Length: 166
Image (cartoon, rainbow, N blue to C red):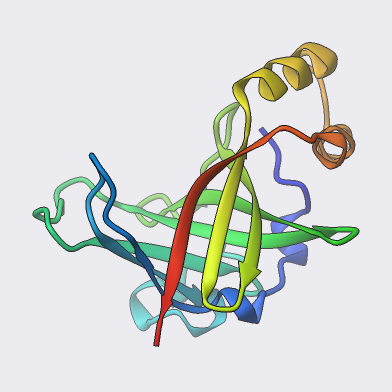
């Protein structure tokens, strides 16, 4: 429900910026992710008041399927949270029509990430870890509670590994 840190305190992780290729795997399409600075958004989004300027935004282009245009009005807004030597990425979707960040129980996705040279690996909490954290926190918790639970979590499953495009 909450990001680990507030979007108003968002900062850019420069090592994430650029173009990243998702390799072809069984059942997955080849695609390219772009991570850019929100402060450098084009004129179409620059007037939206709720996009944190210190954050990054992510776009995705599939290379072997047709793009979907109708009804797509969201941009993935993300910013890092550093806890010790571990990096996490808070991801919230921004609706360009309503000019608001998504809210609610499934509004934020948190990934752990590791950049090694030209490789970017994302990890998601395992289902068992999510279940345990939800049971401990219940329905009435705040971002500080979540931050404490996430920082203690040890069960992360590799979600995807991307390769930098130079």
